[in-house]
Amino acid sequence: MFKKILIANRSEIAVRVIRAAREMGIKTVAVYSDADRESRHVAMADEAVCIGPGPSKLSYLDQETVLSAAKITGTDAIHPGYGFLSENADFAEACAKRGFVFIGPPPAASRKLGFKSAGKAVALAANVPVVPGTKGDITTDVTKEVEAIGYPVLIKASAGGGGKGMRIVRQASELKSQLEAAATEAKASFGDGSVFIEKLLERPRHVEIQIAADQHGNVVAFPERDCTVQRRHQKLVEESPSPALTPEIRRDMQAAAIRLAKSAGYQNVGTVEFLFQDGKFYFIEVNARLQVEHPVTEAVAGVDLMELMIRIAAGEKLPFDQERASQIRCHAIEHRINAEDPDNGFMPCPGRIESLELPGGAGVRVDTHAYAGYTIPSYYDSMIAKLIITAEDRPKALRRSLRALGELKVGGVKTTAGMHAKVVAHPMFMGGDFDTHFIEKTKLLDKEAAHDRA
Image (cartoon, rainbow, N blue to C red; front, side):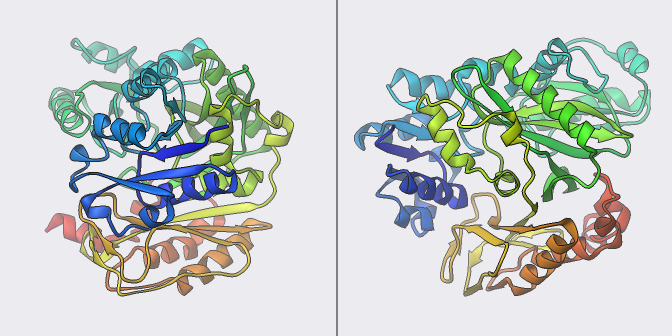
């Protein structure tokens, strides 16, 4: 087992790694930018190294500086968290060359699955259903190919997500201009302008399967996470199990995820994402890393995914089989609490947290790096906490969510907690009958829409 792990990340995910490592008797090294000197993860780690100024490209994305920090601290392994360098196959390769174990998938598997179009090819070879679309990244005129697919279609960036480089096209006259716009945005966001096209599903749910694969050929798939409630393709609320899936569909989806992982030679944890509509599911992409919403699976499956990642990277076998991985122990819901102003177009609200009251009680977990007196930097993602709710069934989990969201008090900055309470209390969400257009259909964010039109 490793003696020391460097965490190439920040905020609540760095805190999560530190806690898991400490329980395993492993020392940790935090890295931080000048803007993150006061972050909780810096104080919690056994050692901490400043790796540069606030902007990510000058600190957390600077591979050489991160690797140098690992060398001078005598690190055995590097955990990338999520975001930043977590899905960078070149960084994983550089870790191996410098003698550090990368706690994540091998570079070859990341390259096979990291680009959405490449992942789709792997899925087809593994007999996993995919959304009809172009055969790969677009390099020529695809007008006839798109006509065969049928409008409306969705243009997607190959190298990233979060809604960047994504455009809906409803008629042929829009295709050329929207392709150019999507490619330009993809290039600016991910450094790669590659795009591809898929048939647009009008009423889908976004459902994903968490997988874990060891270095000995064993792969398991956990119960699904329903991540359907989104705003501008950014996930807001995640839950498990999905109110839309039958046990039969769940088993089929898990089997498809396992086939895909084995076909790609995947190792460590990852997520296979699907769209689900009218009783059928379609592969869309693989996230070759840990997900923000992983605590939902930890609660439902009764497993510590962070510890599992570390043990797999150290060469250990999976400690359980598919039957154990499939067990559903409770209902879980995660709320991503961001420092944003819902009444002002969800503008980020960096600044000092003057006071902070966190919810507690049975079935309430809070993952955060924030505290009273902490100053939220302007350089990074605005998420300040994850509120994870568990209960024996969905109705009780919804009631507990409302109670916990009401207990959360953040002074000094605006947050999205109130908006989450509106989502949970809405009859459509309570009934479990919703799709990825839930926010637009319910007009919960009319003020945002008015702001965007202004």
